[in-house]
Length: 240
Image (cartoon, rainbow, N blue to C red; front, side, top):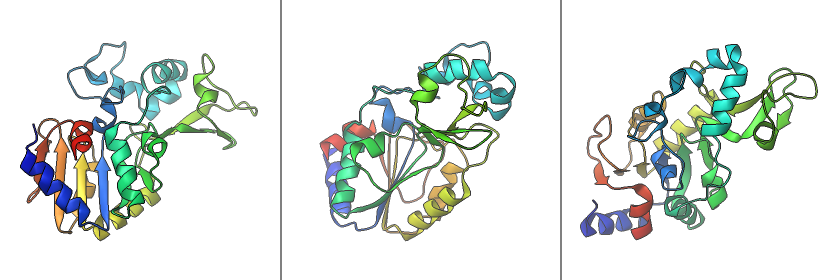
């Protein structure tokens, strides 16, 4: 649980920041009703015919395409989810000129829905989809609004623009993320256990003044010199 001293210190740091960057993970969206992967009730602890890690792999997409989309529609897309206090506060700081960018591992688009403009999506987005044959773009409804395998007018399979296991992160998104973190005066790491690489390694590029970690529970790695706040991030940001 956070303390009043942590709240006041955090407020002072943010008020003095002009190039803050936020790096977030699944914990940012759990308070909007989107389950994470590794918590007690996360996807990795649920029972399926195959492990979720395999279902969300490029191999499974190619070899069990129909089953992939059954899982994807059921567990990966939450169109009714709304931004929470963390998403809204980040968008507010951007408007005020305190926050330069949001770097997220999430694919739900809630940062943009809250009003954030500079959002770097390391793992893609459920709201973008494309034909694997001709490259034509499609909205999310083309995938969620049908049964079976979604097909393009050319006959190709429509694939969500999300990074599957065995796939590489987009190099330009990675490069921009490194650039923003290197230039940041404050780095806020929130709602992530820092388990997933290469994304978790991005924090090593930070050399600014203030490093803050807001996460419910311990992270997989300790960050030297960081102010650690043990709290659900929307709860903490809502109190700032």
